[in-house]
Image (cartoon, rainbow, N blue to C red; front, side, top):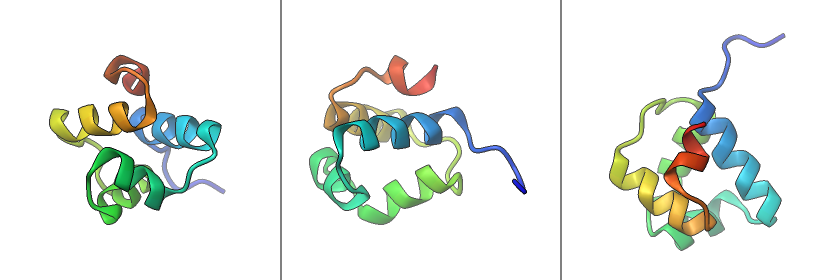
Length: 70
């Protein structure tokens, strides 16, 4: 039973991260942001990360910000 639906951004970050076969920790290093920031975004605790954070994550994943938002 799902309590609430995860934000699209959270689902997409997880999808692309798993596609690359990397951990949340590895992504945090690639994106040069704190590990707990990745966890909070993927879990939906931070539903609207800043555009700067999104840009770093997108770069770390090798995708565009648009890819993460759609």
